[in-house]
Structures are given as structure tokens and as C-alpha cells.
Image (tube, rainbow, N blue to C red; front, top):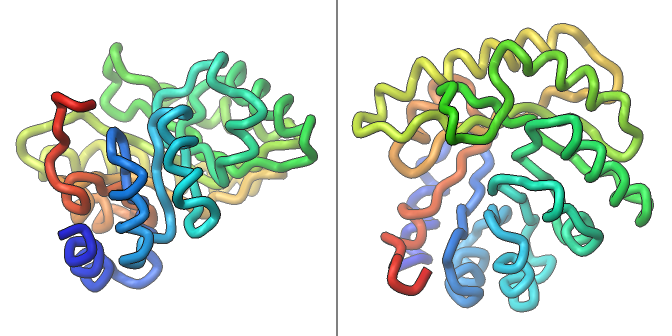
Length: 222
């Protein structure tokens, strides 16, 4: 099932759109199946879970961190393993990533996460504060800002997510136009299983898809 799901999605995605397989709660074996079917990027929400999968999958895929990021999560093993961190939402977190990367001589590509729905319980910088955060982070030597990411509110109708994607794209384009040093606004990561088609219409070039690849989660084992 995973193989067929991946192949169907890859055929449907327009050129230039990168697929991140959102692998939260999935087994290393399921993740390996997705990679063998053609997935090139794995998105992980938890560092420990990702490390278990990494032991099986290794460098057959890129690894993106797409979960809520807290300072104590940012350790040497994390920055060694991940190829991109998509959920940077504060200067404090960015400084910790920068410090850890400096220890191993690595420059970490990151995306700044936008709380486009302005939801108190969600991570992400508020839209009006995004530009200043990007400016502040651009001064760090071991981080490179590569774009923006947003989750958007969980809504019943995928079409209702469109305004949040539109707002995030506008922020992306504005920051891109500033031509800031150490900032390459290349990636706009938006959209999940229910909303990725609308996200692509609104400018996303990274989509994070889990359920449509792996099936519904078994929450009893999560």
C-alpha cells in the first residue's frame, strides 16, 4: 500500500514540488518502504523516534525536522542527523542550533515557522514578527535561512486553509525581495494530506504528507 500511495502522489505532484513524508509515529520499516518507493525526504516530529528510523534508513533519504522545537531538543546528535529544520520560531532556538552546529562545523539550512492562524496553542512566529526574526537569525554564522513554513489551522474544509497559505506566501515574497545576506528564500513549506493541493496553488514548493502515504495512524500504539 505504501509503495502504491507514494508512486501515485509523485506522479500527481507538479515539477519542482518536493515531497516530505511526514513520519510521525510510523515504524522504521514503514519509513523504509516509503523511501524505497521514491520518497527522498523524511519529516520527523520527534528526535528519538527519528533516531530509531535513521538506524534503518540512514542516508538513503534527507531528514527534515518538522515538529515543535524546544531548546532542550537541540543537541549535537540532532544537528548531526537532520539536513534541515523547518520549525524555527524564535531567536533563542536559532542561537542554540547555531551553537550546536558550530561545534561540528556545519551550517544548518532552516525554515522559519509562521503561525499563520495566530493560534495560541501553536508554535510559530506571528506573521507581523516574521521579518524581524529572519533579520536576527541571518546574523548567525552556522544557520542559513532557506524560506518559510506554516501549518495553518486544522480545518474541516481544506479550502478554508487558503487564506493562511496566501498570507504566508506574501510574507515569503516580501522577505525574498529584501535580498538579506545569508538568507535564500528558496522554500515555502505548506500543506498536508488534506490541504497540499491548495497549498501548491498558493505557492508551496514543499508539501508534508503523512496519512495519504502511510494510512491513518494507529493511535493506540503511538
